[in-house]
Image (cartoon, rainbow, N blue to C red):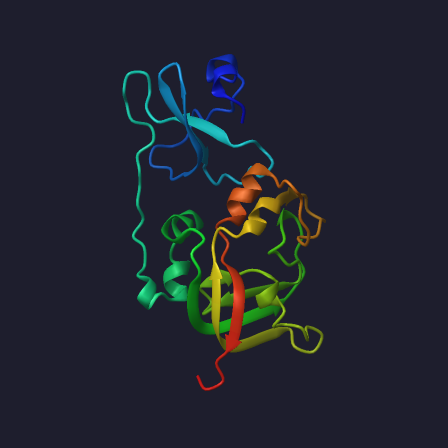
Length: 214
């Protein structure tokens, strides 16, 4: 986004969010930018408009009424972190709690073979293999999907694993929205604005070790 001095909301050069419901949770992506004494933040409201430019919202209206109020989710303790605790958070909350911090989880990994297309694609996505831990947290990335290599003979793979991974994976910058009938495998550089923010909320596995004695 260029200098807001020549891209003011009053001239229609910004995309503004005018009708978000009170209490809607949003992710602050950029800002603040001050225009005519009003502070604006670029936000992602997770409306799945992946290819639509992200919008801006004033922190407060001209009469001083607060529009954007900070919210801190109740974050699980890292020392006792489980897949269930992470899965209980929505994606924006998990991203807010942990950012790109590397996390370690133990549990039952299940990967299923299927066919999917459309909606969202990126380097951590797979059109044919879907994995989760303890049926609570989706696991993304080639490290975890590579565990399920024998899809022809084993439609569902299970095993007890220790995995390391993070949210806010750098590959999110290459995510893009796709129409139905399009593979989820692939990447664009740069990605689509909303798709990049959505992919930041995915838990991407960087290492997986089988726990044979568990």
